[in-house]
Image (cartoon, rainbow, N blue to C red; front, side, top):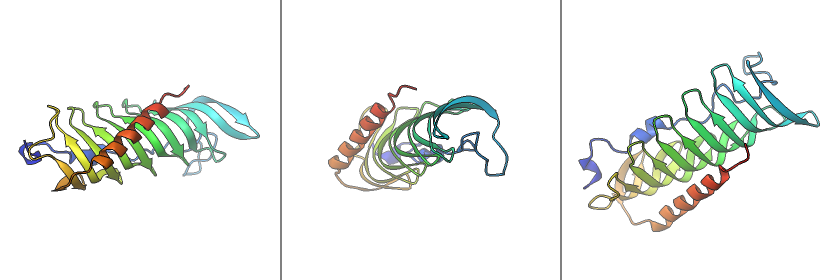
Length: 198
């Protein structure tokens, strides 16, 4: 079965992906973007005046537990749970997901792999809620690069849906087992990173 035979292709990934940032980028003890303190409650451990590790529950019921930098931004390993049930576990840098991590969406979709400035970016695996899976390269929160598509019935389609994807659309066929292996390795690293003490 070819990708074109499905009414619903992986283009929903572009809609589903969201940059992992929100109004909760800074620690509540720091001034917000609009010059006011964020509302909520939490605990922190301080070292030489800088927050190192802490937890915070925001007014919208989102919560963060993890490491912070001296400017009050999520920085290091952390767990961010949004009010809608979406959850991110992994690395942060200056308030954004950066490095490897796992993102579970409220609808059951998930992503494991590399992030850059809050977006899926690099190598990883994305599963839709219906079980369709893409293993490969991502750019700016979208499927973009070489990869392999696996349908709900665990087939890859006929002819095989492996090759170059652009903006979540399959463009041309090309064997790329090394890219798929790299995506699997990054997903495994992300899963192991998510097993943190928080």
